[in-house]
Length: 348
Ligand code: SAH
Image (tube, rainbow, N blue to C red; front, side):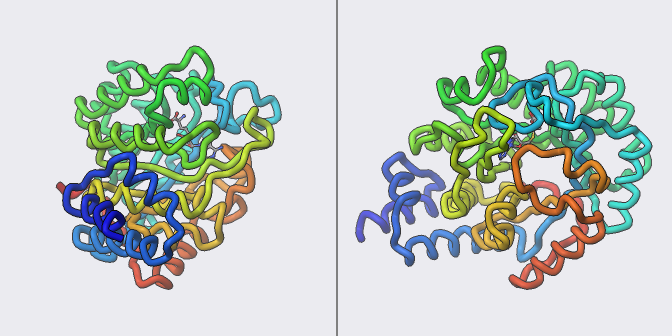
């Protein structure tokens, strides 16, 4: 018992964890400890953000990708993927709908699609910023040169999400094709921070070959980078990928890691992800109750939702933006939280 207290107190007071503590918190079956971990994380989030949940409108604008990440359903080798890209007009129309629904952050997410040159991305960002100057634009478009990141930033982009996926070199190699490297991923994240983006890294929980040790390295990498956002969600197999027969990450593991990350980084913007909602019908609510404070409903046109299939059984693929928005509001109200229509920037 002494030992268990020590881990929890260390996490709450020193905002840090060691490998032994992580192993304990991820494997204990003591319901009391598990409940206390979530409670402390939730209270930490509430002390900064109250019972507010920020919403981000996710626009999945292209599923073309030049990369071949082994876990991802839109990898270039997947010839079963039905490829699409949205036009500028379609993207702006998603924003218009979203703005009317109270979204003040738009997230442009996509594969690494060479059609979207820097020029096109900059044109999109500046069109979005001039039509909606009170909104934040977040990009999630993968690895680019520092110059490209700078150009998007100068065009008005505010935030950038680039999960590091794993901070362990060997693990990274097992998840990615040989031409990708952890080194470059980290270079990207450092560039993004230095340029001045609110930056998000993160990883999948339960990805193939992940161990407690690699998760520990993830946590140490996050501690060193000090990102404004951290995106984590369970790995879910996609049948047309080499990992199609692997096991999905678990709800318990994801929730515990959300809590640990919240306790290590009290101010961080932490989404309760769609993947979490996919592995359990109340996954996103549980994520908020474990310390998350952001949700990202889908604003993509309904006819492309099904095609942006990073993993199987993704939820909400048939729903209009408005349905997703109000469904989310109800879900959050049910657990005593409030979806707010603020930009929801990082609070220092
Ligand atoms: N091309 C962009 C966006 C990638 S999709 C980029 O490289 O950042 C966003 C995230 O979805 C990825 O970073 C990955 O962590 C997650 N993802 C991909 N495939 C997944 C799967 N099978 N299960 C769960 N999450 C997945």
